[in-house]
Amino acid sequence: MCIRDRSILSGLNNSSVYRLKETWRKVHKHFKAVVEKFQEISETLSNASNYKLYRALLHTVSPPTVPYLGVYLTDLTFIEDGNPDNVEYKGVSLINFDKRQKLASVIREIQQHQQCPYLLIKENVIY
Picture 1 (cartoon, one colour):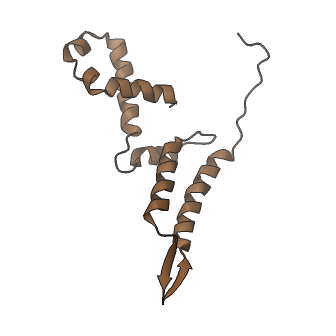
Picture 2: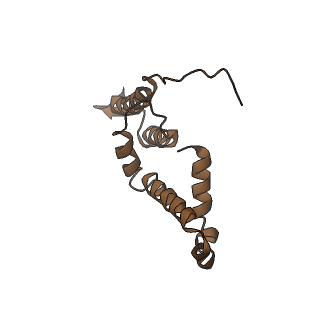
Picture 3: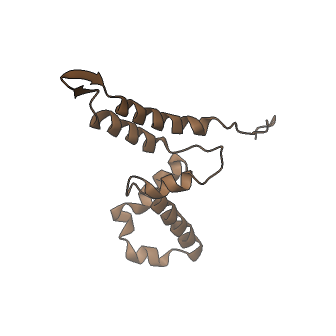
């Protein structure tokens, strides 16, 4: 799903649009099916349970993929802000390797999506 689609979805889910019950009843059935598909996508991309449905779906698809980086940026932010850089052990300040391992794990997952090349065909004619 691209940024434009997420923008459309945000607009459709906006409370002032969503609560237009009479207007939604008059929308053609074909467009209702499109809106229902957007709702399904919205549920998949929901940030509920830390993007649980999206993460599960992402782990089942075959590469190449372009994941939504907001998920990974959120992970990196929480790891960085929620864990100290150093830990105390017997009065000595040590590097928090657990934090570094968590950061490396997220970065490794991002890199996995970059490993598979896209098999694109060059088009000489642009319309």
